[in-house]
Image (cartoon, rainbow, N blue to C red; front, side, top):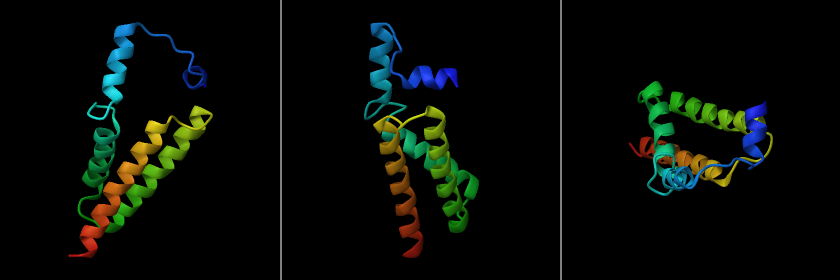
Length: 103
């Protein structure tokens, strides 16, 4: 995969404005930041599963499988923001499961 190898190498050059926007976008409150991206992952899974706990467990496993496949396609360990996003998404799943077991 040429694009993945190129991107994973870190040898991507961009202008200052693009770099600044990218930093904002992946920042704590950015659209591609951990909080918003993990919430989108969870919301997507929830929309597909409805309020079915077993289907939500399947969705969580599918998300984790996708992360592993993305790591393989990248060719090396993904940037830390990716694992932080997965951790945050898994926390949302675990909170959901805990709320369902207390009902």
